[in-house]
Length: 174
Ligand code: ADP
Image (tube, rainbow, N blue to C red; front, side, top):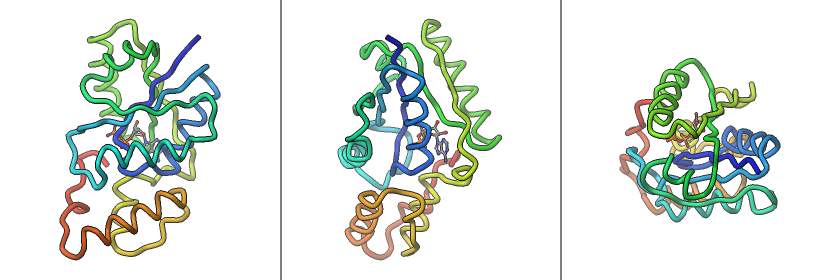
């Protein structure tokens, strides 16, 4: 049984992530989507909410399981018997980061491999940062995220009210 683990912050999950997850689920016997509990990022959603949005997204995908995690990705792979880390690659800027991460993880755990799937053309521009930014300005994100995620975004920005500073503080990478 070959199990893949797709780690990420998913703040929030969007169609680019979903496409990578479903394609990986066709390659591996089981795909575990692992939602970081405390990534080094300024997050819009709390870990429990990101987890629940990802769970709802894949509730009808029989070989996709969703977990939350903190700590090293390779430790979570070992604990869940996953032999492969799955990542998505958009444009060249992703490559350097993913390359560094893959080599670092390989140094920590030579028995665990990294497989990077190339994004589908139509999702090349899509990032959680873009989704957050458009949603924070009241834009239509219905072509970028499932409806339950769009609803959660609307709710979250109402909760935050005017003057929040979450969106401009994007990660260096996306
Ligand atoms: P992280 O904080 O680990 O980068 P993200 O949620 O931003 O978490 O991304 C998780 C994974 O999904 C990363 O490998 C990222 O490159 C990939 N990804 C993000 N957006 C897209 C997209 N539009 N198409 C394909 N892969 C993507």
